[in-house]
Image (spheres, rainbow, N blue to C red):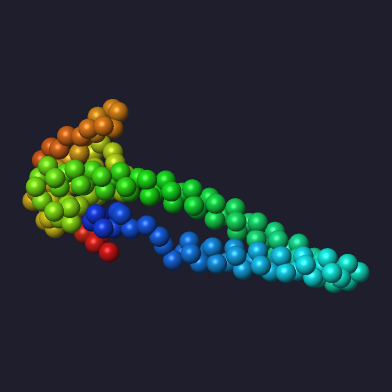
Length: 153
């Protein structure tokens, strides 16, 4: 196969349709629970659907828990991607090229990640990050297998 490189635009993309869909499901479940609670309070003598309410409420709580976990993971991934985007902007400025011409092989900043200028493997650098993550050094490098995939969308 080859090494995969991510464009700046891919790293700065924020929302996904899956998280929006989950929010819609949570809101719909909350509306159903509130509507049934209102119905239940008005008709206290009829407990016909009490078990259904409990089941829907538990599913809703499970969905909220999953969404919160995914939201936290998404925030971490977004912060990591933003750090790589910041590094790519700095490399683009240093190498005097447009940020859309710089690609990284990772969505987290770490020593050993690869950065390439343009969609070729001829101008490629290994990034060395200092201990406090405030500076970096670029060293020219070459891939053993010079095949690369460039993700731009």
